[in-house]
Length: 381
Ligand code: NAD
Image (tube, rainbow, N blue to C red):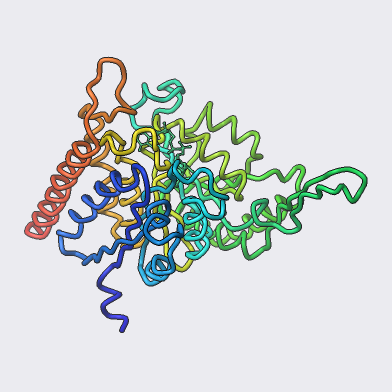
């Protein structure tokens, strides 16, 4: 029974709400182009999540969607969130579907690249010479730390004499080891630099974090490790982002730092993400459902298309094709194509669909050139 699964990659597509379906269509466009090469076969299935699932089935994560996700090789998600449901309690809103699918899939390493496109340098609030060449991959631990640690409580009654509330930043050795190993593996495949972020001058949990990261480092002699306090890292990201390659952080620090580093790219619309390490990897652009622009065909699909590239790299073993998608995006941006979020005064904006077509056309050219190169290499040998 393993044969079919080995050969075919089953992708569950959860387009979701708002601009989710619009940008996911473009992500699928590049995946279909890669599939058409025939190196690996892909099977795409769709299911409902978020507001779309509430409308159809009365719940933001129907059981059928959860089961289909767990039976797939990768889940590609658009975005969830719909203002029509704002009055519902949090557990019944579209966003609850997202939290539930993340929990069901169990990924503990959230990967978020922050890349400075030379063509978009003027879109970043940071000076072009500061961000030039910046290419960072955040590896954020996703299932531990303050967001999940026990005890956690809001003691409204003030049982100790005054109202109080607390959360616990807790990590086990195993939780640190497994995310550190992923970060080291990724650093070894990139520029061989890993910066581990903590607050070890103040927090015991950070002291354990640092000790375990140093232990794991011994398995990766080709990777240079440095440790930075989270406050210093926040500053260095803004005044010298080029110094970073892979940044490994615990959950809360990673949440804050990866958002901060998002300004390097120039628009929320171009940021991809992947959550790996669990039962099934989950791929989603960083942005939300953007109800303010949904249905107008003007959303930027690049974040979703780069998310598809991450899927190719981390779930399909197609690193070369992932690079080709990333290169296609660069080529199209260098050629001046801009969706509305990227267009500056005097620049014409193209539609979501047009951006998708241009990136896909560039991808087709790159894949053909790669095939031709391999053919020539084969004949000259
Ligand atoms: P958002 O990311 O949807 O939008 C923030 C701003 O960025 C908006 O002005 C929007 O127009 C713009 N924007 C976002 N993506 C864009 C794109 N691809 N192209 C062009 N412009 C883009 O965040 P928000 O407004 O805070 O939230 C809207 C809804 O999305 C809420 O319901 C929220 O809960 C949900 N949300 C979902 C996710 C997710 O599904 N992963 C993430 C964040 C927010």
